Length: 87
Image 1: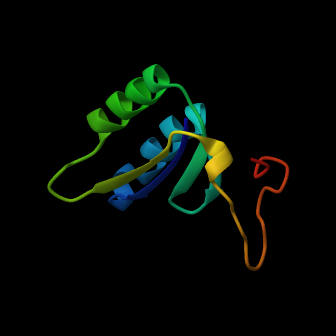
Image 2 (image 1 turned 180 degrees about the vertical axis):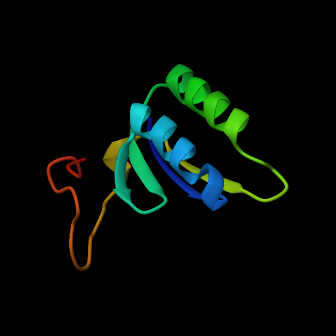
């Protein structure tokens, strides 16, 4: 499946969350990751992030696209990582 994860995490935890997400997905913008991932790896990723987050202050949004062929993407402005942006 293809996922897009966005987060709003306290500054004291943001680098830890980013480091975990980089292991599984592609960093496309500040606080935004995306990529193809299996359900098992997504579960493992979210478990790791869950241990870092403070649910009283932080938030994480996960958008799942079961069939990446049904996704189209347009970028306005600078595409920060064009090679990895190919779907």
